[in-house]
Length: 74
Ligand SMILES: [Zn+2]
Image (tube, rainbow, N blue to C red; front, side, top):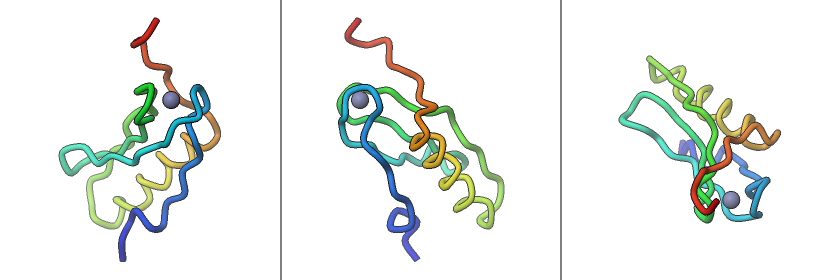
């Protein structure tokens, strides 16, 4: 089962750009905007069972707009 197919991401709350779910070094997830670089915090996991849950938490956080705005472009 592909984890990416289970995750729905809304567009960036700042610029409306496309969001990307990123896995970091095999232990955490975050979501970032491909246009402006805004991103959520990291959601760590320790086991394969926690992996999907952490990805869903990252996506949920993005979708409710708890996104850190990038300093770039200021
Ligand atoms: Zn953006």
